[in-house]
Image (cartoon, rainbow, N blue to C red):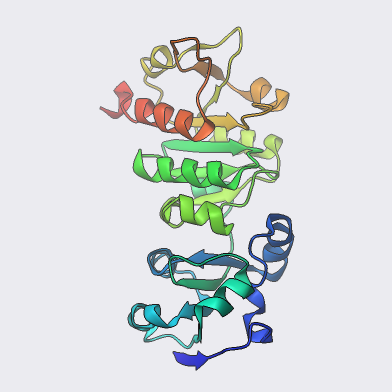
Length: 271
């Protein structure tokens, strides 16, 4: 590990960390360059623990010791910068002291992710990075074995998604589907029930479905605005709802994921 003090916000060695508040820029740039940003020593540690490789780290002086302990045996440049430089480069105040530019891992195939799974969460076209991160946190904490995301779903490795997930994106196996047609074939071949969470006429209450005791379940959730696509609803083997009261018809998508995953992990076949 090489510790390098930098004091110029325009230094090109800091380009990976530049303008992180611009969501559109990061969404376009990170996949192209094969990078993502991990924020805070704790998240960096979880990423490294999951086998992800850092390209560099930008850290404020008071956080250097923690990064030194974490990356002592790795050939990674650590750029130590004053607080004002960190803020000027990233575009925001870095409360957690460290940002790491990480090489993106090669995503597994859908079949590889499904191999040892019995409960899978599928996120379709959820555009809000906070909701994606919260859904991954629910998946990690409530027994999902894997997560699939649709082609247009927000990036689970975007900085905000990673932070909100509390490292859940490194804990739960996941991959991005190429299209519904291929994914449905893979899911059915592996013996999964595809279960859509939606307000539909044919929907049954979640607890009624849970009582059926399906051995392998893929739970599908859509965006808060548009909900699930017609394609997702058409390919679903079952449509379920969470019974609500008080005049409220639905929950935030991440909250709904948590409730449904908790219920499904207790299904009779898994008792």
